[in-house]
Amino acid sequence: MAETGDGCRIYRHTNGLYAVCAPGSDGPTRTAATLPCAYATCQDITRMAG
Image (cartoon, rainbow, N blue to C red):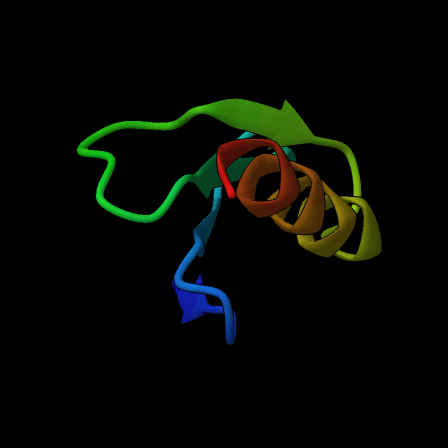
C-alpha cells in the first residue's frame, strides 16, 4: 500500500491491477492498470471532490 500526498491510498491487486481508494473511503473507488495511472486517478478523484 502507498499513500499519496493528497490522501489517496493505492493497493496492488494479485491480478496486477492497482486499486485506488479515495481519501476517507473504506473500499476501492477505481482501478488502474499501472502505477502512474493510479497516481493520475488519485489526482482526478481529489480534483472532482474538491
